[in-house]
Length: 324
Image (cartoon, rainbow, N blue to C red; front, side, top):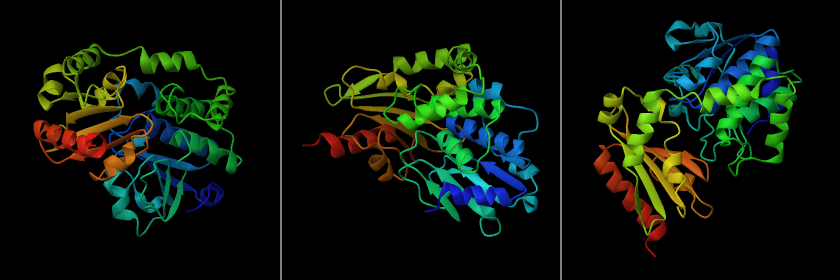
């Protein structure tokens, strides 16, 4: 394991830095990537964010022209290093990372308990609320000021991964980082409105469809919702529109295990999102199925259609937590 001071020194000596995050990026992956890129640019570095797509509509207000590109459009021979943010494993990030890890140093900055330490340089802080918080820590270690446009992106990273500071991963250090971002003058009311109160009609309909599928198991201690590929197609949605769906079963009174299963478009597999109460280790459960994450929030994929995947997951849940 390395330190943020070591990463700060590497970035100080680099002139061109490539940045990416995990596939199907969420608010933390997007905000941390944009935040890191912008604060490094303010320090005189050249940065490129690659393969950060598809970006959900709710985060598009953050983007500036020319900040992001596909890996095919970037000349990696110019990069001194690649920073991978918020990704628990090499295969969770862009394929371009694995293709170039032998020739370009990969810096892995993450907060997932299940991180595989895949980089040449690894900084994994499982006490951090988010990759966004870790970028704030890195800025302090490197003695770099955070400009307002970077602060805006990092606020999105932190506020989304902490559930608006309501999840158990919110710590005093998290709040201090958020307070420092506020001091840059960012308009958090406008940012939060864009994220949470400006939802396209199709997303509301998708949530309604998921709500119709709500079911409970194990004496209502397990709740789940499902969406099929046909649901996405019929409502004109993609999986990027489903980021908040897991909160439907999670919000049900008395639930200890909340699940969201949905079929990935263009892939023969079912994605599983898991949220749990204290005493139910979500990361351990998902690691047993090839996934990973945090103790209270994790995910995995099942190489099967939705109906088969649902049966498999419920069997695993029963055996893991409710068979005694």
